[in-house]
Image 1 (cartoon, rainbow, N blue to C red):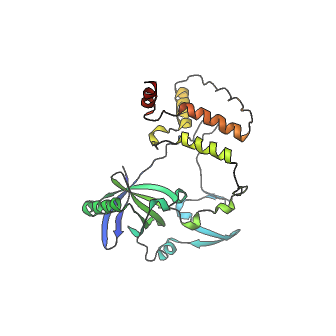
Image 2 (image 1 turned 90 degrees about the vertical axis):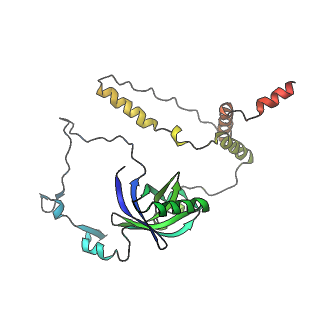
Image 3 (image 1 turned 90 degrees about the horizontal axis):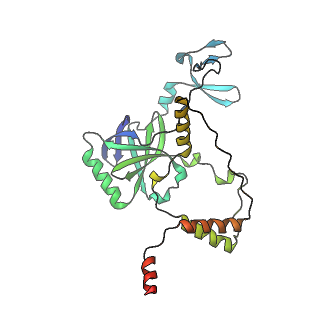
Length: 274
C-alpha cells in the first residue's frame, strides 16, 4: 500500500506516530474520450477567452465568486494565514462516542492507520482500550490543507479513520421534494411487510455482493478486444401493475420458498412420526 499521509494521533498527552493508507479503491472501469474521426485521445487545454490565449499553471490563481462575475483573489499566503492553530500533522482526538450514535450519512472516506517505528506500543494500547470500552473516537485532522472531522475505530486488528461530513454539510430531509408525511399504515400490509423483512434478513457478508454491471462491462470489453461479435440482451418483459397487498403477498410467498428451514425442524417432524 502507498502511504498517503504521515503524522500522529494526539490522545491526551500521548502522541502515536502513524502512517495513513487509503482503505478502499475505485473499481469503476475508466474510459478515455477519443476523436470520433481518428480515435486519437482528446487533450484538454486551459484557455482564457478574454485574452484569447492558452494559460499555464503559473498563470492561474484561485478566486471566490461572491456575486455573479465578481471575484476576490485568495493566495497561498491567505490560506496559510487562516490555518491558525490547526495541527496539520495531527489526528487530534476530541471525544469518545458510541458508533451506533453516528448515522452512516455522515461517513465519507476510509483510511487505514498503522504505527510508525516508535508508535507500536501506544498504538496497541489505544486499540485495546477502544476494544474494551466499545467506543470510537471523534477527531479533527488536516489532510491536503483541508481540515475535516473524522472517526477512529477498530476494524479487525487495525485502527481505521473515517472522514466525516460536518453537520452543516448534511442536507436536511425537509429539503426533499415529494417526501410523504408519516401516516397510519394498513395493519395487514404492515404485518406482511415485517414478515418479508424477516425472510430477507441475513448476516452481512460483503463478499457475496458483486458489481454485476462492472462484470458484464468487463466481459463486453474483452470480447471487443478479441474481435468477437457483441449480442444485445433481449429487453426485459414489462411487469403488470398490481396493487400493494398482492405485491407483498407474492413477495412473501417467493421468499418463503428460499428461506432455509430452521434448526430442529427435521428433528421435531421425526419425533411426531414416531
